[in-house]
Length: 408
Image (tube, rainbow, N blue to C red; front, side, top):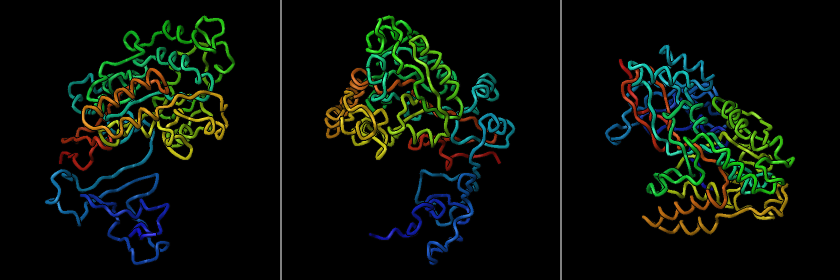
């Protein structure tokens, strides 16, 4: 096996031995001693896992070699964790300059948006990400495409958006891939529209009536599988409130939820593992790695991306009888596949490639229906009045902290 340089011997803790190559480095990097055996090396002091990060200027960095990363501030201190409302109050008081990766409380957004003196402290940037509800295609009643279509019609997307804070948080989504990955070919495409994005119960009931789980055709599921559907959610705001709205939305269709709440990392682990036998995962999102539909198609809908060995085809699009059997599902359940459509797009280029990803999106929305997409996401951050320069990192979908400046 080839040597890994300074990473050698740090299979599980390399983060605390990482050498910065940009304008910043972990505090204490200059004290690392890689001449010692890995087990005797002391980690950086500037990274306390799960608690804090401190970044300082990197003396080995040459600004003349980089015209992108300005590195305005001398020191960046990050505290990990905290309740959303408490953190918002600290931003209001100037004790924090921003909450780097979180959702500002809706009340804080309303306060700043309505005050002309505070409006400039709200930053809303398209993150090229989509928020959606996943359905397990092998778990009744979602093995029936009509039930999946019913959820698409029923969802109060505008209600979900309001619980995040309103239009600042993005555009209502009618399909899967963000528009920039398809040349805006599907900009206005929405196969399951509803008035003002508030849901269409009549259309949802018509879809449910066409399913095998509504035996009397009244638009209400009368099968036991519609009761106590296992629903895995994120414990952080706004997901519990969104899930409460989802439950309210589904009651007219005869569907009730058994909600199980977890910390975000655990939530994603369970949703990515079909052995969890969940039915709904409504707290998930996905963003591009780079601007191409390839970053949506294969990782989300190819057979190779079905867990638990892989990620992130959570609904198990394209699962074969053997795959289903191996994960404890009924192998006779017919699961639609997107393999041919994905394979067709990969070798194409230019407008043909864009058009192919758009056709994949249509196929997924109309023939497979693995998701209920509801929001093309904006990253929203409220900053303190000390922040005088701002930039957004599209690759990370987060603020570009190397280009943020503070008043002296």
